[in-house]
Image 1 (cartoon, rainbow, N blue to C red):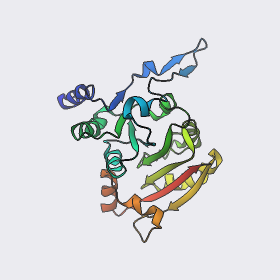
Image 2 (cartoon, rainbow, N blue to C red):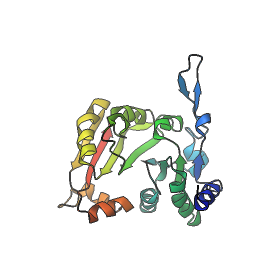
Image 3 (tube, one colour):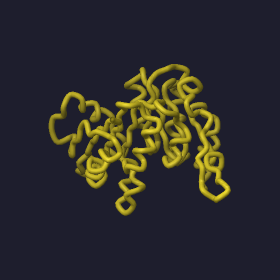
Image 4 (tube, helix red, strand yellow):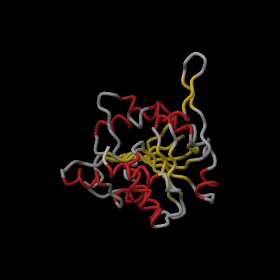
Length: 232
């Protein structure tokens, strides 16, 4: 492991906005060897213990370096934003920026999305963003909009809460439109190429923030798709 990465891991320990939880404290096994996910200390307490306000909470799953989370937080100061990713070296950039710029409505969580229910209580989250996630062409059950994941999100998403998918993958876009209703989500909006023409008024905001990957995909001429789901 390079010295730069080791330095980032060490600095991650100093960021108050970054929560890191060892897998061993999330999973235990019953007498039969079956895994049990343990609730974590911040579950149900993010507003009180992290943000110190009662504002709506928005998650970005698979946030990478946190650029989308950061930009959303700067645009919507009346909401709290949490970027979730498993890669500590990536999260370092977002956590460092949020710390150095004193952004009060930003936090980051290092964990696998499979364990997300250990960290959030019923009705604790208002919205979820999934931005340019791996489409998992050979493993549908690993897609972050697979019904198995959507059912996890329902355990903490408010009724009427939103899930946004922004992706260059037509496979993931089509899959989400096809399967989300079976998990109790209504498709509110869908666009197979958000930069190809005029968007409806309630979709125009999704063009305003671009991730590193989004910019690269646009340079390559790939269409960017968008889906908005509502937990009904």
